Length: 363
Ligand code: V47
Image (tube, rainbow, N blue to C red; front, side, top):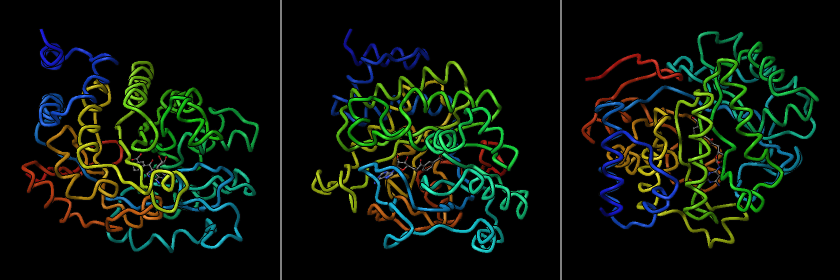
């Protein structure tokens, strides 16, 4: 029996793939064959449906105490060129047009400001929830939550409980980067480490908060690190069960030191598609795989739908982290553009809310 036969049998039988299977798949050139296997899993879970939502990103500040070498968004102080810190009370006016256009979710992440207190972040949520009680607040990565613990001396559960009281409804999956310390120590040594990132999500899941997960790939990591990352997420999901989706994030090399070291090379389309497909195969217990069109381009995200992905994120409106790093995509897509991409790929668009309740099936 060849390794292909063994993996194919496991996928059809719904059996878990091993770490070794994952690394072996990364070594294979036949991306179509990997994609076909990923589609077996994707069809079993979702049939022909592809999810999207109507959302708006809000980045309250880009001033950050940390120095991750892949980041093009952060500024070290408020006096740096391009630095900004919005007052919480100014946010409602900024985002009202998007609310009037029908968004249902605010995706709120930002810098770890060295001088602001925890109350600033609570106020961001409180002001937005007061003004727009019907909008879901998906806010703050595990790294931000851990930073708030350092600011306040409180534990993860206390910080999360205070944020829930202020209006937090769920958490995004950022800050995961690459868990393996051999890589993490070189790209973001100051950030919460793998254990801390996982503990924050574990705590959120126990408090009833759904969260997402990500992986930043295409820089100095090797396939082994990618598969290790996925296996660690899978292990956590077995324990706490609250991850809704996995989003592979391709490294963007402009305006950051890591990109300079890599001669500003972007990931290739084949690597992007292969990574998505393998994640669908390894992460058997995370229901959704997101093709984040801002990062992939809408065209490649559309292709990804036939390689295991079943979610295209949303309308997004005003994305900053990727655009500061050289994203070649637009800032926003209309729902009809999103639906056209999904339909043209042969799938059924389904509008969802942040926690994956189906709102409308456009069959
Ligand atoms: O954690 C930062 C990444 C993440 C770069 O949960 C970069 O639904 C590429 O997590 N090149 C934040 N990536 C974005 C994020 C996210 C995005 C979409 C949906 C969700 C969700 C979460 O962006 C960071 C980091 O991994 N990032 N700089 C860069 N130069």
